[in-house]
Figure (cartoon, rainbow, N blue to C red):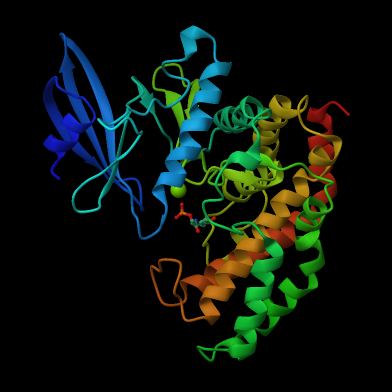
Length: 363
Ligand code: GN1
Ligand code: MG
């Protein structure tokens, strides 16, 4: 179905004044469309979901319906318009529409005067980002995570990730194992540490929460004038998980001194200024709803997410590069080495991390 048809399906009957394709997502096709409705300008985001990556988009939309309604109920009336995404119902009463070709569509109101940032060099902005993801946790702290669909099963099951790597090493399908001895040795050495969180979850020592699972800074909307945070977006991977996963992945990505695929690993490491800024924002937001065990395992979350991604990159390298997109042939190996360098630096700074976390947790 063409876009004009999709407008009608979602009840957009005003005059369309413009349509642009947004290029910053790698997965879904995204359009911003501007409408004139009763003399007012209103914009919408229309997306067709990538059903190769997401096999059951109706599960995603069910999670999104529950989670956005819950967040909206926590916001004061004056913040409801811009503090959460508002998805439109289609003519059949669902928050999505499947057209005759099997394409899967959804639409939400574009939050007026909002922007996203790709880099966070200003610690103040990083503190706000921490607060935004912390607030997301807080708003959903009383949401029954077990009612959510697990969109990608075992996504952060570090034990399964290690098992898969072990199998790939045994099979050696691309004949590359002999060239990565030191990397395998490093990851094996810290296997026990990387599996601790999953073991604690299994023993009931950590609660299952609603987690976002893509806590990169560019998934936060900021007010373009005040730079205040508005809402967390990209809710496609919202699933049950541990708070340490969301915190840890944000630190892994946002508090690294280098990019996640820096070939010169002497440039890689944990930037303690960025670490502290994000931690302050995040921990101050969650400290009253988080358990003691959750707060005490946040630093382990950062180490775990970094080791886990090293395992995934190495597994993909040994398997002949099937999962992650590459920019050059050795890209997965470079990524593995960079994540290993970051993990090693984090492990050496664990006490420092814990001291900072405890300070903002009020201990
Ligand atoms: C993938 O596609 P992107 O960049 O949003 C991956 C994450 C990794 C990330 C590392 C569904 O996310 O788990 O942390 O790459 N997403 C999936 O760059 O596997
Ligand atoms: Mg994403």
